[in-house]
Length: 146
Image 1 (cartoon, helix red, strand yellow):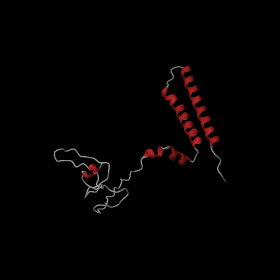
Image 2: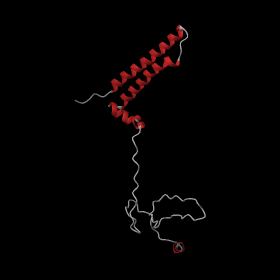
Image 3: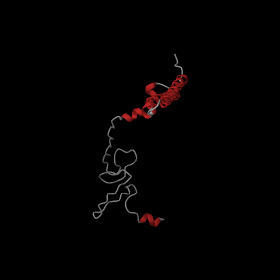
């Protein structure tokens, strides 16, 4: 074990960086952040290099413009409507059932009176499901404290 320490090259605080040779154009990526001047590994949370004293370059992340998809996240919808979770789920199910009632007429075509009656029954069933979901949402809503 002592033989290994005697043959060690470099100091213990230097980063284990592999330097690319001129013959190979392959760029070596490291997981550690190293100083640009002396290539020593930065101490975690340090603003300066502990070997040469060079300042650490601050990596500023580009501010991401708010995306429209963040408004589809459940907690944003919950905050916008001001409803508890169970009531909001029932409300969203009611909207889905109402949309299904509208889409039934576009998806199925009626060639006979019997087909038309079947489509109307499906619409009625979807609308009843929507009403049941809306009522459940109202009943699951917590009373506001006055």
